Image (cartoon, rainbow, N blue to C red; front, side):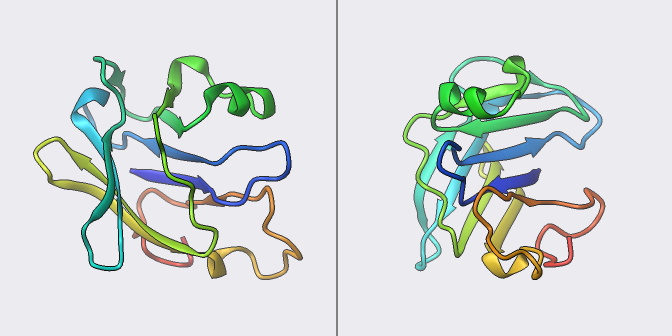
Length: 144
């Protein structure tokens, strides 16, 4: 499920999406897809998150990015839990509809994020990720 989105990185940063397996069993990354829906509710982007067999174990966090080298120069993710996705579209800074799906098309998680979800006392959102507070609360809740 989705846990974090870096929508508007600072000058040296990079966009990324973080996911976690909150289930009880490992999931093969090759069986997972990430998709971006357009205004007509059809996919403008849909790709597997991996082309090789990689076990995503329960309670582990994985970072999806279009440029793993740039991400590693700014952050220190576990390189074993970093997946570079070719042609990952830019994350819209205002709002977007993303889905995480199994290869059979069933939806694991979906989010239509809104930049208004940022903490309202921030004077800028540059370099600040939208981070999920609780895996037990609804993804779409602006309070989560």
